[in-house]
Picture 1: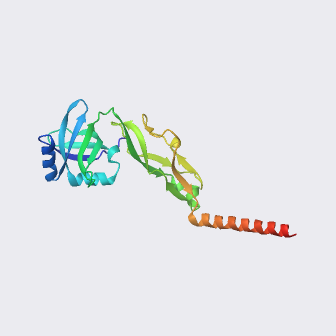
Picture 2: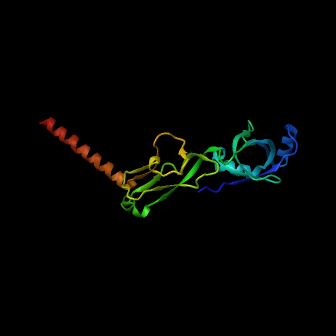
Picture 3: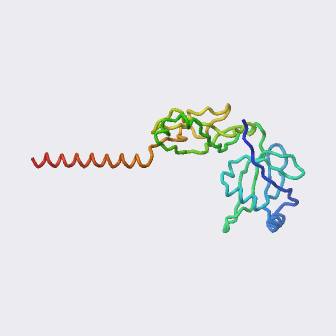
Length: 216
């Protein structure tokens, strides 16, 4: 199932060059361009405040967007570069590339957990830690999964969930080749501390016993 692709709004930009770009910035826009996909490059303006929100949200360079622009058909795009002011570090220009439905892209997909009610480790007080709440996957632009699901049913304290245990959609693969950990089930902090104290007591007893034997 394809996930919902976020919209990004833009306005057509009349004129090109430094003069048109400066004018757009004075009016509260960030100039940009969309290219590729078998069509001519198209200059555009992005509302500054909306762009800043998306940049602060993270993953901007690895998020597929639905570009909406007046007078143009919606098109799927991915950002291929954000130029920033050398001093203020604010965006000054954005490059987007059009994608076909068959284009392959790398995107971060959220991870959903199921099986909590059938997890013995949780019932014993274990703590589930999401090592990777998102996983970067390589997939086609027309078939982006909304999420991937991991199950912790039957897991005990100390068990882990790795990417190899996940059923990924057909034609989708992780960008990392190794079998990495997505989540793990660890002992509660109190139990870990108690265990460490017990280990320390055992070690102290052993030292004392050694000393007694030596004195004899």
